[in-house]
Length: 239
Image 1: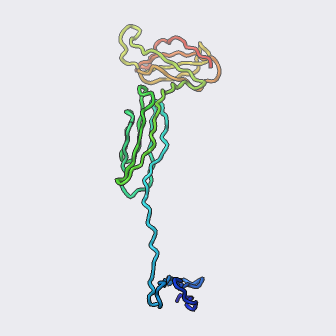
Image 2: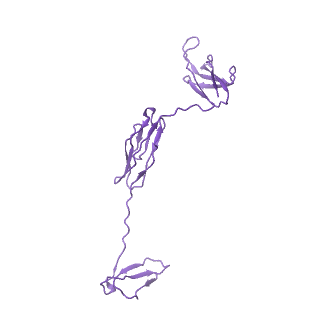
Image 3: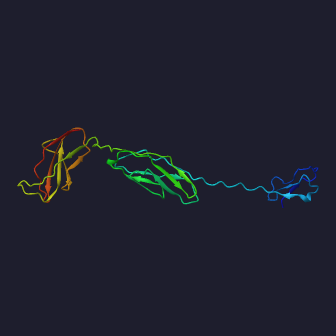
């Protein structure tokens, strides 16, 4: 049983509460405050008061995120905002959506791949989140679509290109072209390396892994029977 110190022997003063207090170290839920009315002449008029629980604060819907400000043409773009927890189902809407992008009203994701013809800066884009009872707005933003930078062959590489042959030596049309052989090396009259390119429609190839030096390249076509055409002209590159 809880041990209770009853402070009841003090002189009664008008308006002063008589306090029932638990001793330190004791457990229990018997602590309470008894209030006396200033006009009451006996303890029988005492009434019990309770402190109301604090009102719960409503969750405020918020939206955030940092969308990328630019993207290169031909490169995928993706942005999805974040939102605070909500008791309702959150839906999204957008204004200023770029023509090259798609938008999800369920997740707020903005995705797409702009083409070379869409280089430039978009208009103002604004995304809104709603849970049915409140709305949150992401600060408007723009996306700059930049022209793609043409990639160049890595150091120690040579890019070869040729024209697809259409006739045999006797003037008849080629019907069984199978691919190409690339012969190359540092000795023009005796190339030491061979690369086989399969497919009649191939017209370019990058030869990589070349150490410093001067290289000579020739290309020949071959047919389904494995017969080579005469050599092309010689291409020269110094690494």
